[in-house]
Amino acid sequence: MKKGKLGYLCFVFLSIVILVACSSDKASNTAQKDNKNNTTTEEKVTIKVGIQNDNTPATQALIDAFNESQDKFVIEWDPLTNDSAQMHDQLLNSLNSGSSEYDVLSLDVVWAGEFAGAGFLEPIDVFMKEAGFSKDQFNTGSMASGNYTGKQYTLPFFPDLGLLYFRSDIVSEEDAIKLESGDYSYEDLYAMAEKYTGEKGTKYGFLYQSKQYEGLTVNVTEFTNSYNNVQTGLESMYKFTNADFSPSDLLNYTEAETHTNFEQGNAVFARNWPYQFGRIKGQEDGVTISLDQVGIAPLPNGGAVGGWLLGINKNSENIDGAWAFIEFAAGKTGQKIMATEGGYLPGFNTLLEDEAVIAGNELLSYPGFQNALANTLARPVSPDYNAVSDTIQVESHKYLSSGEGLDTISSAIEESAKTE
Image (cartoon, helix red, strand yellow):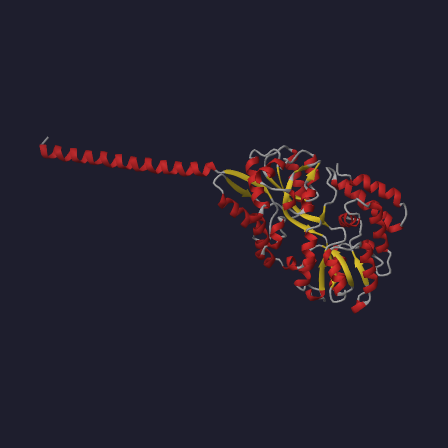
């Protein structure tokens, strides 16, 4: 072979070797880079949350903010149903099987005792202490709803509460101030209802929910001051039920009958939830009164809490991560996101005076509403809440319908409502 040809072949061979080597180095570097990225992703532990669907942007914004703040955990959220009964059963089926399908659980306030009593929830007292949280930083009724046998199992996700609505264009300024302060009794309310009924076309004094359903349990909770004064509370309810200023079918009233009659100008006072404010503000179908005719006040003993709580699945494989999310979601930052992005009531008390939160929820500008939030009540906390509520509904409705058997009925309710 000629030297020139041999030299050319050697050159081609060396070129191929160099190209292969460079390609190999590049592939190696790319693989190392990919491995590094995969390692970074894998380092983030996935925390699965069992939270209902949200028709506002708030929950997704909350999750996004938490994820952005984290280099250790990432939230996975597959929204659950908004049907409370279906959601209860779905979570219960999962927990009964011992599953760690969800690390964080969103719970209706009346489920907390049931889930804690069944051993499904992890106590959070130690976590709270380490985080510097104290119970008085959060909504009182929400915290009581998540406290079972002296241990705290939940923090507030977003609370709801019972309110007294009154016709500010009828009630005197002096009486309005008294109502808004919360410094009045059901006896005072009765006297005011008697005094003002008939003014400006009103025909009813005070409306509340007294049909035999969960709303009656809520109202019994309020009238009896969380079952501390059962006989007195029931007697007061019976007095209102049979008053001349009450509708004859009050014992069939739910929230719907209550808001309809108040919004149409038929009643001076009404007990209902915050949603009624939104209906009046939005001038929904059938509403004939306006917000400038409406005042807001606490109920005499405080309003029963509704809403939702956050707890940790005891079978979670990532309990520290579950707490990290709850600490964020129930704390000042998370609650501000829920309030400003979704209009939810904050369960973290200092936010009740936050300008951005108030700007996003007109109710918070009402002094009476602020006072109502500061004095809330929990329904009975029980591992068998449905049975407890059924007893309260049946027995109280029996008394309100007849006025008979007060001693026996009061004893039955007191025994059923015991929380431990």
